[in-house]
Length: 90
Image (cartoon, rainbow, N blue to C red; front, side, top):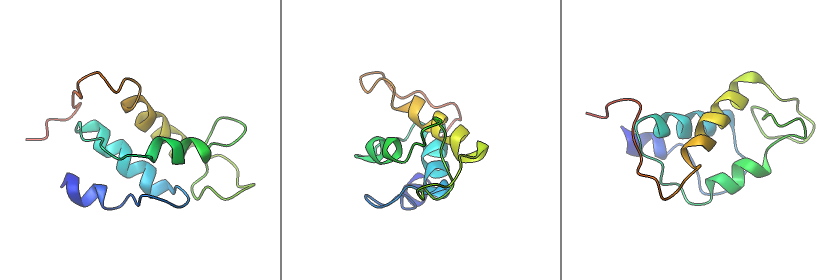
């Protein structure tokens, strides 16, 4: 399942709500190996600290992508720490 979910996250382009959700889900099962995603995500952050569903300039932040982005970013907090899944991948 993780491979299919990771396939929803392209290596470039604007970050969408679906991509943020996919990375948040992958972080819950301890599978976050997406080079460059943090940079793409942070570049999509709005001035108010939140995220919009499509990363379009001027689009207001919404709770769904903002909450998922926080979950995803927390999984990248310490790259040296072992990934401990919150959900048993088995």
